[in-house]
Length: 103
Image (cartoon, rainbow, N blue to C red; front, top):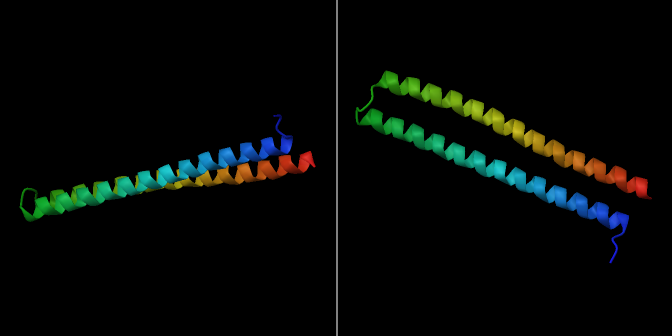
């Protein structure tokens, strides 16, 4: 059974879109995982401060470093999400362009 060029386009478009949406989901999961790990680390620091295993100044410094790391991390996530959305848009535009060239 031979596929129509239009069917071929639709299939390629839908496949690429599904892959990109999956990529987007992976980025979301990665972000949630990172956020949870950072919360956990902050909690551990606060616990150690309360138990006087670490002094206030050390905890403060460590917390600052953690938040800096979190900012860098969030920036990377933001860029990756943007790239992914851009690819989704490009896929949409390519599909429409190719479809109009068929007709």
